[in-house]
Image (cartoon, rainbow, N blue to C red; front, top):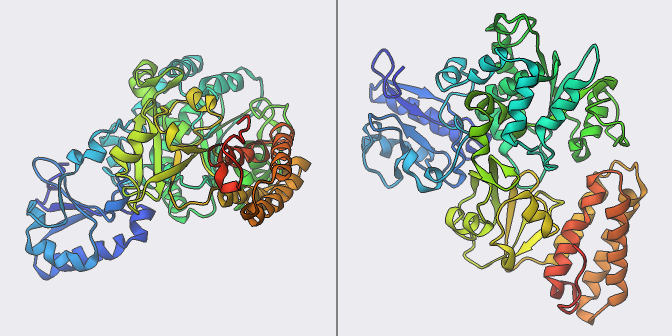
Length: 529
């Protein structure tokens, strides 16, 4: 079907159904467009597509034209009559006009692999998914031996996009080599890090790519059952996944006989427990099995004894959503993007005090400075950017002197930082870094599962200690409290059972290292991380 007109010659208009667009009035805009067209006796086809990820322009309305889609945004319902008066259905000039969508600089300079369809297709339409190269990876996988599928993922260099950056192919190979009557694929969709939304965008804006990726994983390791553990705060993603899973079953892409291959894969959706700790893979398994989400000791690894004691692949949404293009284009194609051991692309989420927040999918190697200024346009307040936190609430704070660091797992590790899930939160020069350090301890105290003492008690004592430092900092240097804080962080780093307690010192120590004046101490008060 032509993007410009359908079989009846009707013009096509696109209004996003993504949660970010909905929060900014996309439904009202869609209703206004339909009502205005009816009042003017005009026929149009309204498609509720996903978001392009240019959130400062949402709701972003697009109109099909012979040259490509023409964008207008941010559009409010009150703007709709004026758009019609300006002839926007024919690409007419208007103050909200942005020209051809694909030529918008923010979008044009990206490398979209995982997000190739986001904002282009109707997320709930299997026909649209197939028309835009969907399920090509699965069809190729069905023609391959399981070991060859694993080898393709290994060759791609794909590493876990959930934060740990463990090679995906190695995890798959471990499960594939296990002997078991039942194996599982589990998707960790409990996206809870501050400043992150790429998982949500996949599930809302291109859900079939996740279903396809999980099905390929099942074929690769011999798993016939899959579970998506979905964050409870994502109702739009839940609705989209339910509908698309049902469609995939009805059309033979899931079930006992996937596309007539004689190979089975069944997929189930489970809503999460609303706890941050359930993003940790073993706590997730506990919750999925119907118990309270607490961390399991390792070993055994979930790849050997995971869900219900069976070999289990646990990957996050972006990892699994990257698999279809790897199987379609080949591991070498994906590996050609990136740098060093950080291969492929990373969906970067730019949020906080930033002028142009949104999703940016780029090959590894782009610097923070490029992201903050070339894409983000600097702070929303117009003030200098003082710090950014990368990798969620447990990520380190990076000062301006480190903004030229390339996005690379090893480069960040050398700074005592993490890339995590690719979320970047921006702060201007008014931020109080001691308060941000205190918040990290408070967050850990609230979200701790309570199983290990360093996390359960250390975070509570850390919050109290930082509050004392903040109250007393006007009185001058307080080396006793600072040394105690560093000692407490060292205990949490080395003694916590999982990354929640083990990483909470990252934001605390990085804030102290780079912004000691906010703690009332001299600039020579440095720490190991």
